[in-house]
Image 1 (cartoon, rainbow, N blue to C red):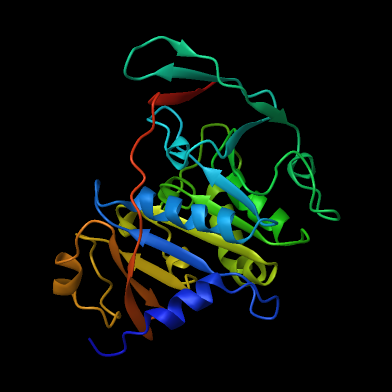
Image 2: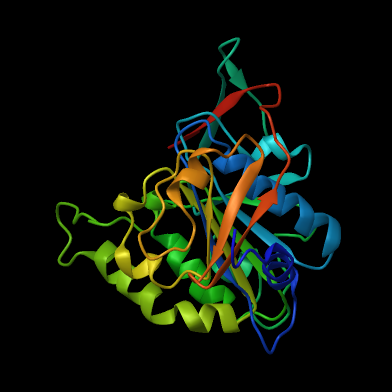
Length: 272
């Protein structure tokens, strides 16, 4: 295929040059296509290659946990007085899994020192009281020293197309947060922050967010955007562990990634 330059694409994604800043990437595919494995693979490579980089991971509560598929390199944090419970999905009953509560973002990682509760060389799994707080964290990280990578599994829950206004709210906070992220997307990258996300349906995402992305990674069965040079038939023929990566509709290439199957125990995180 013409314009296939995967080496250039992977080099840019692996580059840690302050003059270039970070990058943003969205992995797209239907259920079972390997979306979570793809971003877990990216996380595992960062842990291996960049020992001083801090990684943040969003997992969906009240469904099977995904972060533990990476192995033992993870630690859980919960905002404020949020209580977490862990239920074994195979055997039933509760599990005792430690987690740490934090009060504000500087508890997690101080902007001036780059140090705090979270540590490099692991997935720092964060459970906020509300998912829009991830946008606040990204704005905190853009002014924090050092490199950070943020992984948002099922990003449509964070930056939805039609954020709703909750009863009793004077304004639609979630809509305002979407606009804030869109306005600050470039500054976040310049702040040495990488953002890697996945979704099964791009139609559920805020269009302003999609327009700010550097890379879109198509897995088998994903719908290709009309402006892309990648052909839909090529994506449909992909097999497990392969992806087409599109760099701003200019160049693209086929990449390979490892599978991360579920680890025992299989459990869900219940947020209360």
